[in-house]
Amino acid sequence: MRAPDRQDRTGTGFRRYRAVLVVVLVCVALFAGFLVFAHRAAIAEQAPPPRTAFSQAEIAHGATLARIGNCTSCHTAAGGRPFAGGVPIATQFGTLHGTNITPDPATGIGRWSERAFVRAMREGVARDGNHLYPAFPYDHFSGISDADLRALYAYLMTRTPVRADAPANRLIPPLGFRPLLAGWKLLFFRPARFTPDPQHDAQWNRGAYLGESLAHCSGCHSPRGALGNEQRDHPYGGGWAEGWYAPPLDASSPAVRAWTAERLYTYLRTGLSTTHAAAAGPMGEVARNLAQVPEADVRAIAAYYASGMAGARASHHEPPLADRKPAATKAEPEGAALFAGACAACHEPGAPMMVAGRPPLPLGSQFHEDNPRDLIQTILKGVSPPVGAKGPYMPAFDNTLSDRQIARIVAYLQTRYGSTHWRDLEKAVAKARKEGQP
Amino acid sequence: MIDLNVNGRTHRVDADASTPLLYVLRDDLGLVAAKFGCGLGQCGACTVLVDDQPVFSCLTPIAALPGRVVTTVEGLGTVQHPGTVQKAFEIEQAAQCGYCIPGMIARAEALLRRTTTPSENEMRAAMSPSLCRCGTHMRILRAVRRAAKMRGGGVTDPSEPVA
Image (cartoon, rainbow over all chains, first blue to last red; front, side):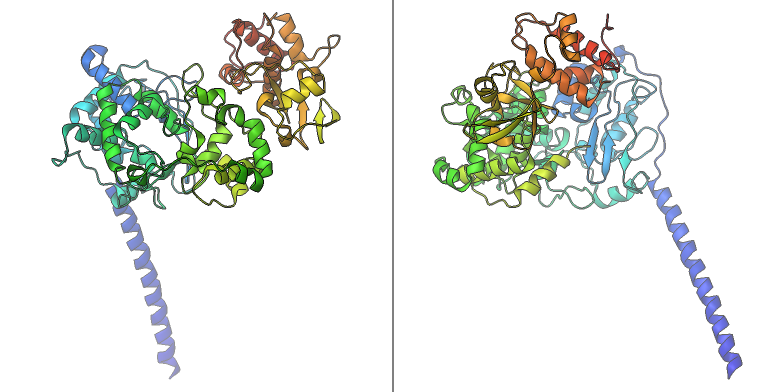
């Protein structure tokens, strides 16, 4: 009885060994197959095209498109040369750096052909065949027309070349291994050229084209999944960008005054809506870029997004503004004192800033969003145009006030003006300080 | 009553918790270096240091200050023994009317406490919240570059050398 038993065991061991070998081989084969699947060929380098390769009209059109696309937010560092990259971009997966997209042959895109540029924009693949991270919004740029891509190429290739290597990305392993991005694309990337909707007029369709493709508004204003994928089934439901909350642009808009096309146009154009608030955080630069493009394009974008918010509550009813000052002072005496010393000189009714036409605090969407992040960030960082530029201004209070003190002011303001019930404010302030810091 | 630590001394101040620090400094403590410019945190003439950070004292309620250390320009040196930043401003003759200068000095002091080797851009960004109506910016920047050098560092990529 023992001999067959032993034989059996030996047989089982061999079969196990064979099974492991098969699994290993299958894994190797799958991995090799994946690498083949992920592989993209390099596109040959070419000598940088001379300026005469492009018409003046194309270059000028490209300049407009680059502003609408807000390229500078990721590709021009604070105080740095235009489009020379190096901007740290904090994500939940680590810090990426915007690349140099000047036509420098060594460190920029000087040796990229138009075909390589178009492939990067539409497929998220660099000239050398490397996959690009989806922080570069090729999922939107795939919608851009051929003519517009050509104009953008013309504009970028005629900028001043700057020799500057972007700092290395700092990502959690194994995300530095770019072939993995082919898997991300397989799951989430659905490239599609823009098609107009015949149900809507030409202006709406122009706004839809610009907003959905080039301006990639939903990149910030839509929620994202665990892998950083935009949740396409819930577009414009509100999202996160650089430590700020980008409020919903759909029927769930928390604004207390309707976003009409006219109001939205003024906001996008000037960075200030007297019925809402000033463009703060990453939106500030969007508004500064849109101030410099043809009016018709900004009106089109405004018309498109206003129609998306047509079902929001403020469209049906614009409530009288609440000011529960005595109740708030009683409930939050510390917050009231801090507000009186730090904020009231500008924000109390009758203050010089209010007389100058700034929106009253209770109009600010920050008070009506389902989280306190934007109110906290506005207090921490203020609202500031870049050095030397014009625009709405509020000083930053990050050095002046502690987490607890900001939490008390937020609690006071919430009681005085708010329509929501935020909790754990001190923790929320600490978190806001941390997030968005690359 | 609120206890304030200003220039290394504790002062017991009888003022409402919402009173801006600037008023207490000038009216109660007689420290008149920091100036009232706009009262809105837009000009920087009132800048002082709180825990080594530059703040607009016109928008800093004293309720925010218990347990924190306030330093005004009076705390950086005296006429006989000026601090490095004060000395650098004097050498470069950075003041014209002088109204913005205490805020400028406080802001420069905060920068140099953080780093004595800032880049030119870093220095300009740090100084930018303070405005000067006379237009002595180039001299003020020279003074900050000089002060960085006097502290054993220096602006890493100065747009002009320290003479």
